[in-house]
Image (cartoon, rainbow, N blue to C red; front, side):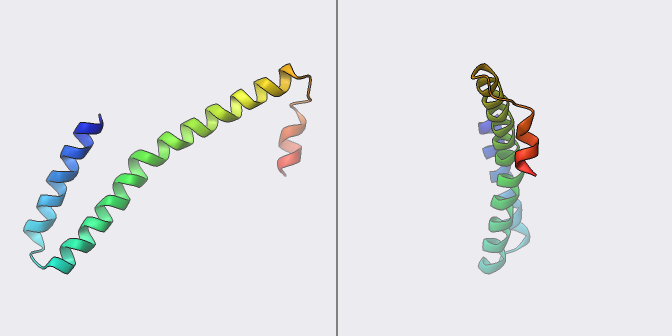
Length: 76
């Protein structure tokens, strides 16, 4: 999957350079592309890991005989 994303980003970068021959516009387009790829592919992965870490933490707290129902009250 990673190689496919890299390849598609190179295609998009080439299209940006073809449409925007000025270097400043191409640099801006590349910055937008990099941030868009990071937002679309990196953040969902970190959210998934965060949800898994929360679940494991609640399981460990339950095994330690802590009241896991108090967790949502503590966060508010």
